[in-house]
Amino acid sequence: MGIFNRKDTDAATTTAAAVSPDLAALTGEYTIDPAHSTIGFVARHAMVTNVKGKFLDFSGSLHLDGSDPSASTASLDIKMDSIDTGSADRDGHLKSADFFKIEEFPTMTFRSTKAEALGGDDYRITGDLEILGTTKSITIDLEFNGAAKDPFGNERVGFEGKAEILRSEWGLTWNAALETGGVLVSDKIKLNFDISAIRNA
Image 1: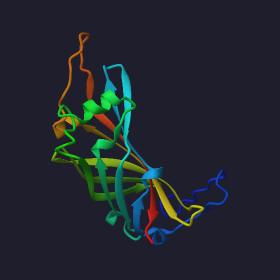
Image 2: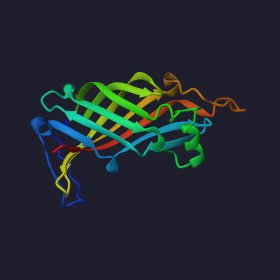
Image 3: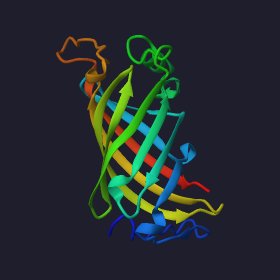
């Protein structure tokens, strides 16, 4: 089943009318709904555990092209001051000059450059990620979660995505050595996206 013929049903939300759109029906412009979306990350800490975080303030848009999925695009703007790892001290350190330098670089951005249909509900989007004024290409693997009309009449689409980056490629090199070997913060960062987007009127 592909993105444009999958039927998404939710038994818990009987008032939401699930739809089974074809290619043409999904074509359009969408705005990401931050209240029902999550942009998160995972970093290895002290070589033994994972620390998870997310960004609370972001905006974005999607253009879905039903007749040619490769022409679909995505755009994200993320406010770095909204980083949240569940620890005020850690968040403050991440906002500082050791990491994101939010006074100088308040926003992280993503602009897609390529979209691919991989078969079934799987897609891949490549784009430019800008952090600290440095732009590098990343690839995000996506799974289409369905399309539905919510109880308020909004036409929604949902995607889950994941990617891995090396933070050092964007100049995020702060670290501390451990007495037992290794470093405090991993270079590899896992990015997670859970996106709900509403079709524009």
